[in-house]
Amino acid sequence: MINTKLRTCLLTVAATSQLLCTSMANAEPDVLDRPAVMSKRAANAVMLTVTRAAARLVAGGERGIIVYSDDGGKAWTQAKVPVSVSITNLNFPNARLGWAVGHSGIVLHSTDAGATWVKQLDGHQAAALVLSATKQAAGDSDESRRALADAERLVADGSDKPFFDVHFFDANNGLVVGAYGLILATADGGKTWSSQHLRIPNPKGKHLYSISTVGKDVYIAGEQGALFHSSDGTAQFEEINTPYAGTFFGVLTGGEQRLNVFGLRGNAYWTVDGKNWQKSETGASNTLAAGTRLKDGSLALVDEAGRVMISRDGGASFRQVPIAKPSPLTGITQVADGGLVVSGVRGLTRIAAIDQGGQTK
Image 1 (cartoon, one colour):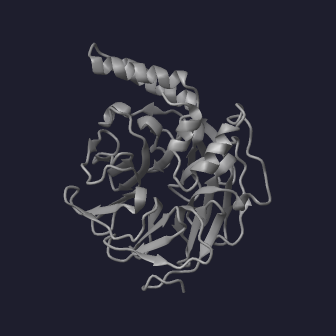
Image 2 (cartoon, helix red, strand yellow):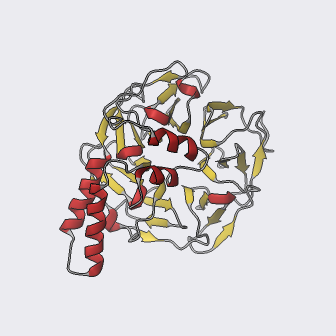
Image 3 (cartoon, helix red, strand yellow):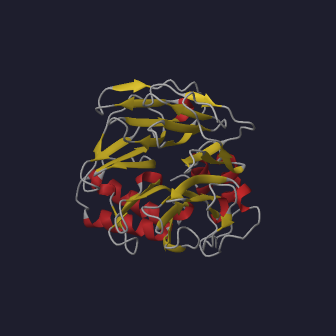
């Protein structure tokens, strides 16, 4: 397996990889036990994700920083977080309950809309769960022996096993995905977890970056054009063939039954049946790092060059939104008044509402 510093570089969206590689390379071994440092400038740190907990905004980033806003992103308050590792994604199935994932296999849980957090899982425990599941399914085949050897190396390699996305279907049932094909599920709100890697056809352990759901349909996107689908929650996944061999950092569902995927070098594709794909006209050549579906059904993507792109035609084409001071972006969400809040290397930025022409109002 590759070393910790190199792995961190490879598994971080290009917009922030250099900064995070430096941060992780110099990290002390107790980051899993050291709380995030409180700072008045927390919202200006490198931020990797932003989402909504009902009307509240919650964002996460480097060194365990999580902040929240109750005024649409104008002012931010730092949350109390028990770890100092980078937070890569957040999810709130309702206004109060939230989960966060990040480096070192961290899963955090909040019961107060993101104001305070507790640790539920780390990379040591995640690796042990993978090894346990692999041992239970072990057989005499060469493939089985290779899988067992990989699981044992995962344990020996330590805690640095990043998770990249988290999704909770309700207050109890959730899913996290990450490096080396890590995929874990819980049915009790994160009190206990089980490895699901044997239920997904990913023998090479491709990194998994994004989860999207619509009803019981679950889609997971990852590296080397990987896209997986489950029609029964998380019971069993099948692979969907895609026309691109590069990494997908995001997958979006909904909107006239369309499925949209996006990732490296400005590449994005859409399909209505999971078989016939069309390439999106993004006008971008940089990594598309994150996206969201807006309230009116439009799609919004952000890239490592600091661009925000809006599609009004289901992802067939995108139009760039003017940004005063563009910088590498990593996340995007929409607030109640129609405005957008983006995360990136300069922290969090609020953008005015977007009109039908793709311009800020």
